[in-house]
Length: 253
View 1 (cartoon, rainbow, N blue to C red):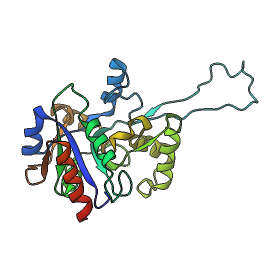
View 2 (view 1 turned 180 degrees about the horizontal axis):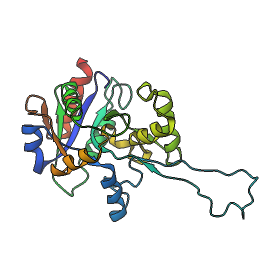
View 3 (view 1 turned 60 degrees about the horizontal axis):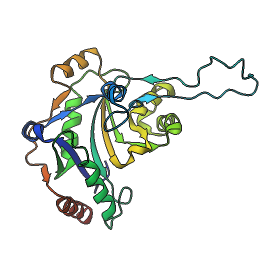
View 4 (view 1 turned 90 degrees about the horizontal axis):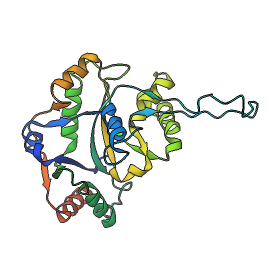
């Protein structure tokens, strides 16, 4: 995770005490987010492409229109995953070292726009400490496939380029070295989203659970606990609070 980043987490206010007192983090399954769209459309947290590697096929002119009828235009591949996400602002990427007020204002408005439940924005004193605790807890799971878990910023691209982007990540990023390109692309798809979600600025921790891990997660409503966060959590009560926190992080680092 890039030094100097500010990390924010949008927490359901009803569960804020458990978040701070126990470090209780929700690792929602990608299947759940796909199901949400099937029920209510691709709005909010619903996304039919969540964690899906969907390569498209183009047929050469060797095939007549008639002979290509019935052939697939695309295929969809998925790997079981549970996701915990935060918002990451990186100096020089999402905003400049000189703070772009419009980015911060739009982010604040976006985070607070969903009124389906009460929300609280939480910042962190040193998210590297929180991150190390998350990875330690994820290490207690058995995992499925070549990785127990991965972490990465989310890449936002046009829908038709999502599969290509996932494949490029699997080809070029060293963590995927030695993993078959097809499998790597399916895993990397958990870090690629439609560009219409780009205002979320997500950084993700993805757990790849086996059957036993999934049962363990379900027993705890897909939550894990990493310990008390009182020394790390900073409650953001207003846009001015957020501006002050961003200024501190970007000016000091």
